[in-house]
Image 1 (tube, helix red, strand yellow):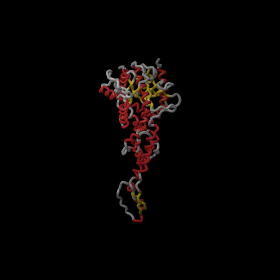
Image 2 (cartoon, one colour):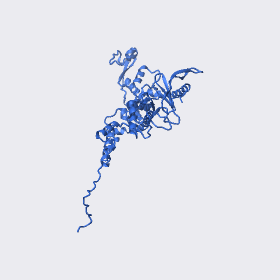
Image 3 (cartoon, one colour):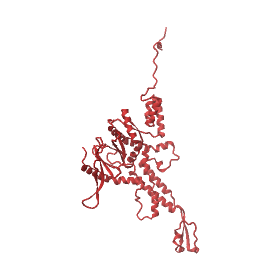
Image 4 (cartoon, one colour):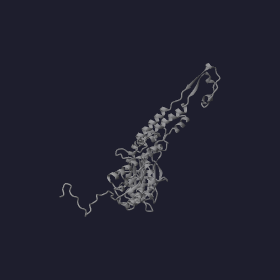
Length: 453
């Protein structure tokens, strides 16, 4: 039973109120990602020259913190007990171009701690799957943490959409004046004829989270690094000030004759020669030594190493110190990130399976609780070691080679091509040698312990 227009407007306004509570945090994360965060350490009234140096001192590491995991997570297959159903559901993924769109969902989860996938019916019969970020979507959950009770989406065209368990409702946002005081409150005007059934028994919004925490709200990769990002910007600012004002040695003139010089001659620090008409006893020359920059550089490197530890990002990627790293040391430096990626693949993989399972229901396919998605393996030194290990397993333990193909660090499409090229198909032959039976007409050998007459 759909909501009435008045009920829908009231529910949309309620969700918009929830959105306002978290919006400031989301927008702050967005500012750090876009390198537009406010420089809280820069005092008011700072000269324009220093303000320019402060703007040039921004060394934004936040996009790299997000990409450290996102660039290692790509879904490239869907596996179910019914291979025909799996092929149909995977076709929905391909028709919706989710090879590309999954990156946006993964980035949203890594950046803000949460992202969303929307599954809706379409006119051509193929379920429509769209990604969304918390900047666009607000959800309200009850006891069931898998499916929201209501969801409000900003369509980006000045219109908003409310989802419940059976229908969607479209609105235009207006500002209603308050009865007391100044200002206004958000309100929504229902668009006539916009109620649509989505043919599902749940709110068709799937939540993607970057972590699993029962006690506290999940945060992404950016928010824990706010302070360290500010430290890196501040240290870089001090470094640039030292470079600008003290990186070169300077000579200064002290004496009565300075009062007679014009101000522009004193300020013209770019001049390499200046003639002084004065008695030798009237002036005194001193030299200021060059400012050492080593301390600033080491301090910035220490902040980046701390950021690497907290964010589980390879330190050499933040510091740019890849030279002279042995292969074993390089693998070890990526171990922390690899553990983080593995954990996140488990969490996000469940959401992908939930979204694809819901798309299958729109096609009349029952949800397979045993279905799983396949992550595209990344080819690196560990992958080469994995192939070597599988070769040893096949050779030493007699495991059929075809049975190990699914564990190879290649995409599902590549492995299927391997099967077709080898003629193996789906069936797996046991290639282990069996002991040969003696021929029926062969004479049994005499027992070694008996003596013939």
